[in-house]
Amino acid sequence: MTYRMLFTAAALALVLRVACTPLPPPEPPPVGPITADCGAVCDHWEFLGCDESMPSPAGEPCEVVCATFERYWDLPCMATVASCEGIDRCP
Image (cartoon, one colour):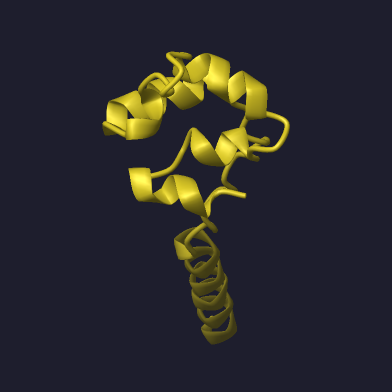
């Protein structure tokens, strides 16, 4: 009878141990590359109140200036900067 109670207690302890072990947190969903276009960049800059969102001295709107330089600019970086000063930190 003692072995049976010992076995039952050990089995119960094992079941409780497995049942009470916390599950690992779920994996975050994969993040794809951030894409942006000149419209998103200029809208973001305008939202931040950046001078870069204003027309150029020649009167070209932000979207036209951006389209001229987009092959040299990192548009995803520029569309997600936290402040106007961050624009200069984008490659």
